[in-house]
Every structure is written in C-alpha cells, then in structure tokens.
Image (cartoon, rainbow over all chains, first blue to last red):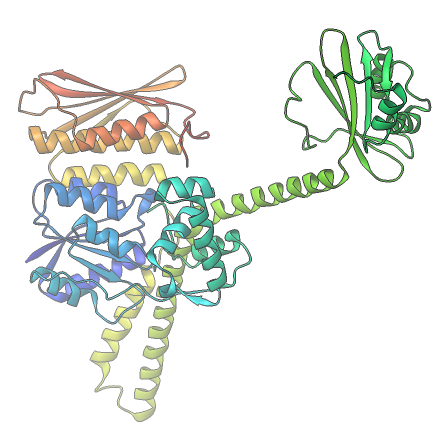
Length: 207
Length: 342
C-alpha cells in the first residue's frame, strides 16, 4: 500500500481527500496535517511514499517551499501539488521544486486518484496550462511571461525603478510593458490592474 | 573696455523682471528694489519696502487677512537649498488668487537678497500631487489588505463550494427517496437509499464551524507529527503570545527537531523558554545519540538564521556533545519589519 501524507488546511477538503484515499484500495493515509512546514518532519522516518500538498497552508506556510525542502533530502518521495488558486507561476514553481504532479482542485477533468496513480507509475503529471482568467478585457493567457513578471512585481508594491533593477531591464522598458498591459486589459491604472489580478488570484506573491 | 551703465538703466532692467527682487545690506538698508516687490509688499503689509530685515519679520508674523493668506502646508514646493540656514522661504496667496514664494538669501558678507516668485501653477500641481499621493497610499493599503486576506477568502470559497455540493447531494437523496416512495419501490431500494443518506449526513456533520487558535494549532500539530516519528517534544516555560514570536519559535523548533532526528536519531526534544526583559530566551536541546563536535551550517540553519535576523531575533549553536540551539526573540517583533522591502 502506498502511504500518503495529506497537507491541507481546509478541513472539508481534507476530509474529502481522505475519503477518496480510503475508497481507493491502493492508498493508505499516513497522516493529515494543516501546516506545510511540518511535512518535512513527518517524512523523517521514511514512512511516506506520496505527499498531496496544498500550496497555501496554515500559518501562511507555502507548500511549494516545503516540497522543495523535502525533495532535497527525500527525492524518492512523490509529491503532488494541489491548489484551487489559478496563480500563474505555481506550475513552474512546482516543476522547479522537482514535484511529480500538479492537480487543480476546482479546474480540470482528472480525478485526484487518477493523478496519484499516474504519478506513482513514474509519470510527471502536470496540467497543459493554468486556468484562463479574465482580467479586464483580456484573458490571462494573452499576457507574456515578462508581463507576468511585471504584474507580480507591481503586486508587491514595487516602484518602476525597483522593478527595473529586479528584472535587470531599463525603467523605460518597464513603462513600455505596463503601457501594453493596461492597453490589453483596459485598466485605468496599475492599482486597478493589481487589485483585479490579486482578487482573481492570478498572482499571489507570498507563495 | 569698461562701460558705465547708468543707474536708471539698471532700475529699468530690474523693473522689467516679472518677479519681485530686492538687494539689501545686513542692517536691512535697501540697496535696490524693483516695482513688483514694492507692489507685493504694499499689498501684504500696507507699505512699500523700507527696511528689508524689518519687513521679513513683519511677513513672518503676518496674520491672515481677507485678501492675503499665509500658506504653511507641508507639501509646499520648496526650492532646493531651503534647508540651508542662509536661505529662508515663505508662501502667500494674494488678492488676485496668485501664489507667491518669498525667499531671503545671504549673497555675501555684506549683502542679502529678497526674491518673490509667482508659483501659482506650481502650487496647484503640488497640491494635486499631494492629494494623489494620499489617494495612492490609501489604495496601496487596501491592496495590501486584499493580499493578506485573499487566502482566507479562498478558504471560505472552498468551504462554500463544499457546502453547495452537500446541499445538492441532500436534494438528490430527498428526490430519490420521494420518487421511490411514489413508485412503491421503497423496500427494494432501501439499501442504496440508506447508504446515500449515510454518506450525505456524514459529509454534512464534517463542515467546520469553529476555527482553531493559531498558537494552539501550531503546537498541537507539531507535537502530533513529532510523536508520529517517535520524538517527544517537551515545553518548559510559558510560550510567547505574539503571533510573530510564536512563528519564529516554531520555525526554530522545527529546524532543531529535523536535525536532531535526521542526524542524531533523537527521541526527545526539550524546548525551554524564559522571558527576560524585552526578549524571550529559548534553548532547544535533544537526547541525540550521536556525538557532534562541529556544526556546518547548511540550508536549514542558514535559512532559519536569516528568518530570525530579519525580525531582530538571533540564533546561536552550541556543540556540547549534542547540539543546542539558543534563540533570542524580541517580544515586540509583531511591529513593522526592520529593513528590507516587504
């Protein structure tokens, strides 16, 4: 039986996941926790085969950061990142951490157990793309990756000069990208833009 | 070739200057003054400029009249150098609505200059800039609040979605039961209907209504996970009550626990907390079986040190056979962060 560690701070979602695990016949629950920072400790005795890891967990601890630490010492443990946030960078970050799969709780058609089966069979299971979110007059997939970088910086309250320094580009290039983003979305200013992307959870800089 | 310029020409020259200008000696005796400055002084003080030192004091103590208002807002467009002790500035709005900046400046050991410049448009733009800055600050605050609450909002959404699903399942059960009763097939479907109702009621009873306190859940989950891997965590002393201090404390405990189990196969971890003045002194020790003579700070301890130091806390590692972590956390670390960008 595959031993599963569930990291999920919403009790109702956790219960639903635990029920799916119990029904599967292939998997058995090792433990369920709310805080991703405790996941590494739970893996210390080598009893965990698979982790189902939420991104935004209790005490604002990031599941992605916890996954990266676990993979560093336990590369054999399979990790599937779960989220209901359409945040653009989560898939890239999960791949960079060496996670084995990614499952959207509210989007997509694959069931969690299907994703678990494929991951345990050695497959890397990632959605084709992030869910498409409408920002003003534009769909999220119309933004370039550089434009996402700029939006992320703006959401952290950075000034144009700071964005330029962070991304190693000129302030005029930052202005050029911002002008393009505002034109695409029809937002009147950057604050309106940031309020919308954060409200629709397209960008969550903390995680 | 030297050419002497007649005094009349000089006077005509400075009279054509659009602002007010006056040169005077240190005792206030006027050397040269133009028409505009005299007209401005007449409006402000009721007389022309006779003694420049006296008139500056008069301007400084001028109270608002119907037609003239002294301006003292913090955002007034001050010229560079206005912080210099040799330069003084004052601002007035006069009867025609125009705004004037008066500046007194030491030119050399004997001479001073009084200059009046019209800055009406500059003043309007400065006021607009100030209001926009306030509005932006307010919007930025709202944006930060939104960022802080978005995860909580999402959690509520997830719970709401689950509740809606249960509502649908409940409706489905009711419909199936009603239909079976109406069709007279209740007896033959009893097993299926009972199973459906049982699942739905179990889901229904699982909806959380009470949220756990952050401190309580921090401690209980860590202890639970530690026991699961065969390590007992014992706390001695009272834990911090501030959220940030608690988070730092538990970050340190996690690091100590991870290292103690991973590298020394420890089965017990002791956390001793003693408040001292404005700081918490924390000692984290374990019963690890492997002797340690030297610590090489890796990613874990390095990241912990960085996290602690960002909040004004500190970390010290002691090698005394085993490893002891000594952590100091300020009691007021819930305040604004020290240094760096948020």
